[in-house]
Amino acid sequence: MRLLIAHATVVVSGTKIAAEIGTSRSEVWRLVQQLRDLGVDIAGHPSTGYSLKSMPDLLLPDMLAPQLHGTIFGRHIHHYYKIGSTNAVAMEAASAGAPEGSVFLAEQQTAGRGRGAHQWHSARSVGIYCSALLRPALPPSEVLILSLAAGLAVHSAVQEIDSRVIPDLKWPNDVLIDGKKFCGILTEMNAEVTRVRYVVAGIGINVNQSSFPADLQTVATSLRLATGTEWSRVELCAALLKSLDREYRNLLENPDAASSILRRFQERSSSVRGQQVEIEENGGFEGVTDGLDGRGFLQVRTPQGVRTVLSGTVRPR
Ligand code: BTN
Image 1: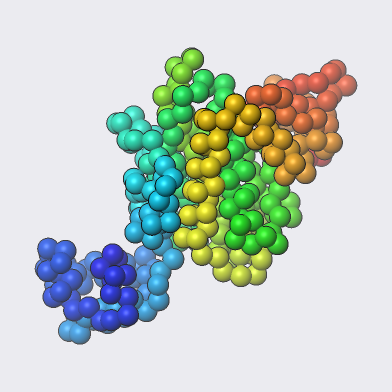
Image 2: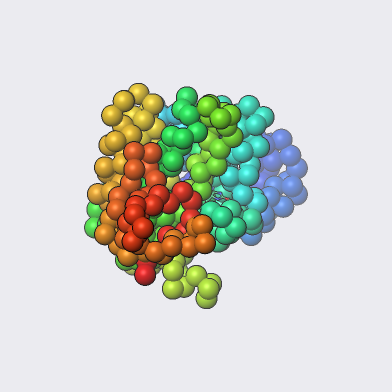
């Protein structure tokens, strides 16, 4: 891919490609077939050579890294055409010592993980499936704030690209448009009681899906379905990682960052205050949302008093 992108306007002979990547022409032919199967539009055949018919919107390190200079995310970008789960890969890499700022991206996930026991629908090259590895010097109790900051990063990245889209944050980690979810965030960590070893912020964004399986149709949307236009995943992913970098640095460096995150989250969420909800936790309870506490947990007013939602699913009633 790197070679074809570098020679985007010309036909590159199979012999040249073979020589440059140190393989045989028949292996080049096999690799080209493989890329075509993955949706890359390549013209040509072994006797003439190959050329890209259009610049692919793939989340390749070569496309993203130049846009991420000066952030913590520009130096260790890993791209997979097909993988089980970028969060699983990132957690394994983290335990093996991968550096902070490592990013794991996939065109397709076969076992995309969602919150709880849910799966994340991860069709090929239409969404962003991204896991960012962080090693914050924070106690585990502050990781929820970091996870809320990831939602804010998605919010500002989308707005930066199309300011007409007004995303709505749903506690803790969904991002909606017109009541339907287009982004979910799964933050996983490895920690001692007082010290985080590492955090993986896994972000799934429905970008260019034109439809969803029947069971998701009423609850899911994509940026394309919401706006009627195709989005560049590379552009959105770069904006997302830049925005996440800003939020993260701010959180580590600025003592007021946590309260700013809580305030901005509440400003960008229509449901965090004054909404009648049902919580699937501790046998279930109902009440009216009443903002976030200082650690980022949702408060719900019930006839028995204010209760704190720790992890349960929040459903509007
Ligand atoms: C949710 O809303 O339930 C969270 C979904 C998180 C999905 C993303 S896609 C990239 C990363 N890898 C995973 O396996 N999950 C997260």
